[in-house]
Image (cartoon, rainbow, N blue to C red; front, side, top):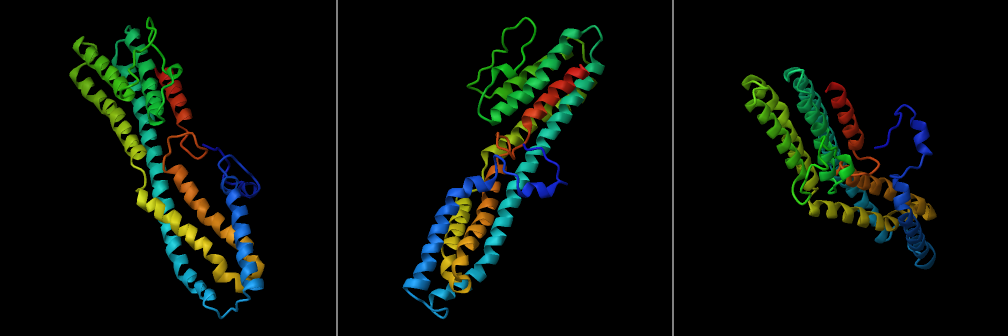
Length: 292
């Protein structure tokens, strides 16, 4: 995620960053410029059509469709942002549950039980890192901290890693209850935080595995394409060769909104505008270590 000062908006005009849509769309700008210039030259110099020709009446269609395409793109970007914000809410809930679980474990376990405290100190952040890698469909063993006396946690990476980590945490909690380290009332209090881990994982998987319907996404792209490709026929008599920068600019606006929506609708990756879950995981490990 890009960190920036929203008050220094003037510098954004001249700033080019990795996710800048201008860089991604630049080849299309060149192609559209050539296409628009060719259509303008044919209509004005070769065919010598008049402003009253049937071709020029396409501008009426564009006037009607401009409102429709604006509604579609607003809905598209709002839907994508809702997914991005829902992902941020879920990771915020994971941060809070990790802290609350660490605070309660610290208060409930006997002072001399340092071994079990260290277990939770290691495993709570491990769940955050395991969930992050699970959403990115990878497994980084160097991010998973091991317990003292163990070489690894013996994770089966072919199976659901967050579930395995949650099972280890819940099993340890029930073991403490059976050994008399935790009372029944304390177990009930801890259950809320333990349940949140699975709830957050399920919510993030729902966002990750349920993209925008294919037909809807394809329709918007086709709509933008035909809207832009017919624009030179509609406005060449009004603008002349100025139709070239006009087509490029309008395509930049419409296509940029679609590209931004595509990027943020899956907020758990490594794109510039995705959620800073690497930083969130580091903060969880830091805060849990301070508490335990």
